[in-house]
Length: 305
Ligand SMILES: NC(=O)c1ccc[n+]([C@@H]2O[C@H](COP(=O)([O-])OP(=O)(O)OC[C@H]3O[C@@H](n4cnc5c(N)ncnc54)[C@H](OP(=O)(O)O)[C@@H]3O)[C@@H](O)[C@H]2O)c1
Image (tube, rainbow, N blue to C red; front, side, top):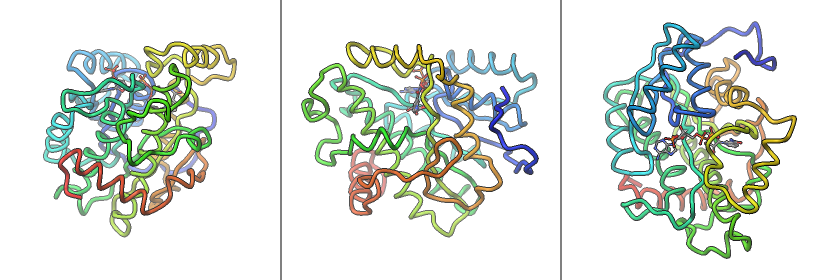
């Protein structure tokens, strides 16, 4: 579980409680394991009681005595995320909140609330959860670090968010290759994550809460490419066969570092790859575009703009 690139000798800031989403497999499960190993009590958010309990059992087997609290919610449903966020705002005081859950889904898949599945899960869920916690009375005056697990800005450069088509319904504009369209919609949602980080960071400036983005690296053997076909499947297979591929535990390293490293105290609105700050694409930086996305997201979720 230890990572050779981890800094040694630096004082470990106290992270008493963390909330982590999408922790029933892949990178999220590894994030919880790393936090639990340093004595942090973790609220594990997963889709169902059963999958969260199974993941918690695996983590306790690796980290005896791990202090884990299961929470379940379908993060693709705004009503579920709002209920979860209200519950967590009342019952927790997290030092760290890591939004990790995400999907790559068919662009035609919509939730029963009429929202495209990738948009709902990858962008609207973290925006409702983090906004609710940041605006709640219990955290307003607290110190906390929020981390949104994003993706590689160098890859995302080519997938600007279309503010007139958040639901990714213009299929040809996503990609001329049909099998790559779900990846293109996923990539746009990861740019939405970055734009959300910039917008929320502006609002949090001067307070005790910070928000930053973190790329885990390209990680084989996670569930993210479930359902891939055609060219996306071929590319996924290449990642899986690449001898330099990273494990989910290595993928957890950068997000956990951004959430806990003492050197990042007060750092807000940045994005990190391999523990280094990197620039995000120009199309994620425009305050006008970020505010337009904030407004559209508020309309879709019923949050105050
Ligand atoms: N893998 C990579 O190479 C890579 C590269 C760049 C960025 N990332 C980012 O890293 C993060 C983790 O990805 P991963 O590769 O570890 O993927 P993963 O193995 O598919 O894990 C995703 C997690 O999110 C949960 N989740 C998805 N939809 C949900 C919903 N509606 N409600 C509740 N939970 C839900 C999944 O639960 P279920 O199992 O129940 O679906 C699972 O626990 C994502 O933000 C991804 O964008 C990954």
